[in-house]
Image (cartoon, rainbow, N blue to C red; front, side, top):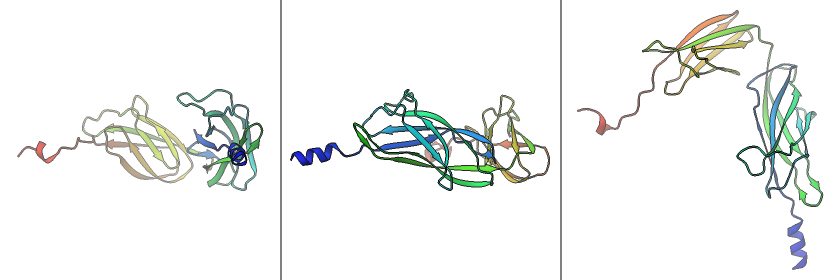
Length: 211
């Protein structure tokens, strides 16, 4: 029984990693930052533990020590910002955040979390998109604009400006209480365009439809 108890006590704690604030696109060769967090399955203090970021070849791309503060709203998620240099080849690259295991007073297993780093060429054109309500012809604030992998949000005047590299793009514009609108464009120079969105009509059950 004693041996079983000792074996159970030596079972390593699991370490769960998470990553957020990953840029939707990073220019080749430029530096960027992401947020990383780690949590012990038993709620241990992970402040000061070193966490590494590894690129698509498995080579170290950046290291950071977790802070001693806990992410608001969580019980034991220790976090930090880590900086790295984007690959110089455009495309999607599979990276990984890792924390090594350790056997101090309480053994912990290693943890990892995969992430995708999307690399684009240097932007040389600006696309201006104006989102408006089709019926009212009024600007739509806070509409989301996606020109994969670039993203933006419209301002108080319904305007979003996106810096992109030359090429073909599908522009997707969506907003709260509106149906999404999509258009294809070929960007060869600065471009101004608009997106007219239709209000999303509330669904009515058959019983609510007038006879």
